[in-house]
Image 1 (cartoon, helix red, strand yellow):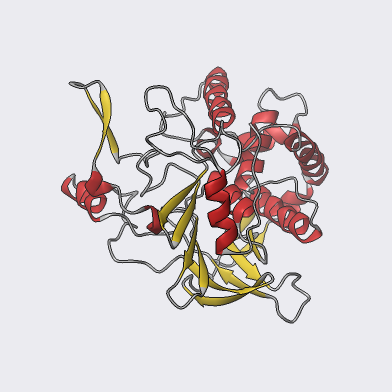
Image 2 (tube, rainbow, N blue to C red):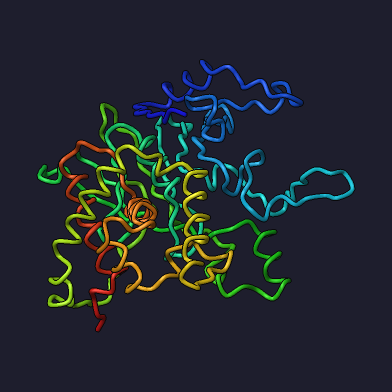
Length: 352
């Protein structure tokens, strides 16, 4: 399945793109669901949605507001009808959760709204980041910093006077029905971030034409990171092994479908099975390597023949939001993120 890239410059381009796409003809559905993929028709969850004559959303699917490719918890299996039913009160509106929303206003001005994933500040969504990178309008750039925070920048190169960057925090707002659903069940320690009030996390920019954008609102202050000290002597003992693993992982990453959901799930399942040989049982709700300690991971990078070396490489590349970019600035950022990943996962830092 091919990944699609778009660099729309105007509301008209978005509208024309929507009208040029023939809806997917689905078995059992015909064209009634009006699914119009951004590009590859096998990736139909990545689609363009018409909200109104003056509003279009670019959706990566499986988020609140998407009635067809729904967020987990919005749909529920009905054993009587043998179908999934949608709880509309938990759904929300597409334009409030889609990663990219284009609007044309009454005065003729155009704006674009960019939104991060919905979840806790410590969560991450490789799919959302990848989609934003591929479909952020021309003149804007989406990227992940070395502290795993996401940003959108204007003005091109950081060396230019017009360059500005804006923090894109995670969205904490959920539909009222979703909030009520979890509250009635006693809440959840992993869902304390949820709120009904608009958190104003989405960034909004006004289109000035020719790739120029003006910040309108949203986002927030970049969170301060706790002070950390690198355990230099310990890390130095692993330097050659880290360099070899990094070079090998990046080479493999350019050839593997690391952003494919099914491939990532297969990797996690294999990790769960492989660690059983060492007497380790990973609970089903854990994501493989997040359950394993630093010493175990050090053993993997130290052994080029380790059966889980590829698995750890995929885990690392997904965590740092690896992409095959040729942009020098993005390459520099990925190197920084990889170094941060190494420090964190191999326990080479101490806080305070």
